[in-house]
Length: 122
Image 1 (cartoon, rainbow, N blue to C red):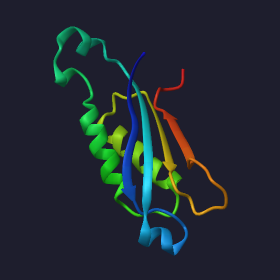
Image 2: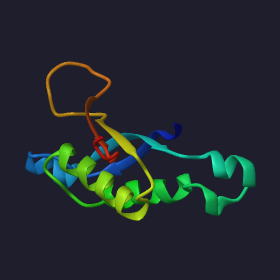
Image 3: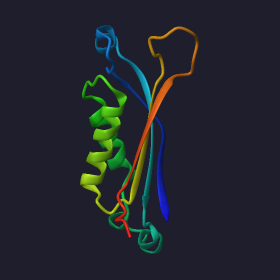
């Protein structure tokens, strides 16, 4: 199996259950892992034989612009949109980190990770 990764995509967005989170916003870090067959592209050197990570990046940015209470909801939308556009993907994992969560203590961030396999059961 082949994999495509987008790592540490930094996006300013407005998500959260607290009203001030939807007004002020903060930076989020998004990581994506996609499993699909890349062998045809490895032989052809043709963009049409692969999945453009620029397209995946655009989907992530578009979905992150839509305000949501829960990061789980945002990740679920990202997964659905990616798979809807690229049904040849067998597995998608999305991690979203809120870099400045409104909680006590110093931390790098608070993250959720959602993953889904699209392989048919044998």
